[in-house]
Length: 160
Image (tube, rainbow, N blue to C red; front, side):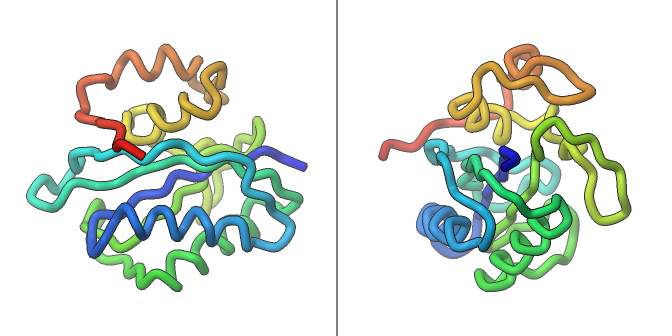
């Protein structure tokens, strides 16, 4: 089994309900087990600023699936929730990103591991720190060091 971390985000429709439902959908991936989920966080959008705030979380998944097979399963969940890919950083019903797959480093056309921008995004690092505070991002640094560099990005934990 490999421990993988998946970022979840949404800002259209009912984003908190969507993220909760997507967490449940992760538990239905064959050859994968949802081990833990972070709290939900409200975050200000990066990139395209004039859009609703996002609701974000991170999930820990233990899997025997290869990285690309897990990515395909994530894309299938996004599709079930009506995800369409248009403009980069556009509003979305659901976004699932494979952040980490064990200590793997991968740079392929369809998948880069660790996720290429995760080290710059508090909306990923804050919930990841809730699940794995001692985590090191392969090829980068300790999670705590990276988190200190982006604390000003507007991330607020939602009440349960």
